[in-house]
Image 1 (cartoon, rainbow, N blue to C red):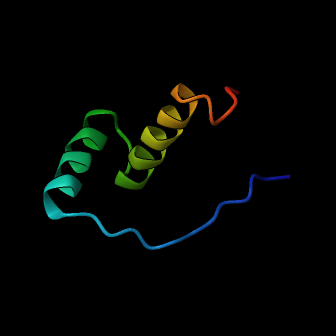
Image 2 (image 1 turned 135 degrees about the vertical axis):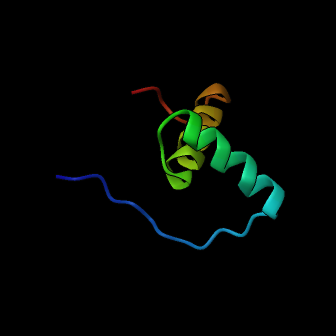
Length: 52
């Protein structure tokens, strides 16, 4: 069964969005995928998300 994904609006300052847009381009991801990857990694580092 596919993983369930929650959708919600996210407001970012333009400067931060631009940082993520450049970072996403460097890693061949969408901005959304880059934000998700960053959040997952931060949660793992803090021990709040089990590593897959």
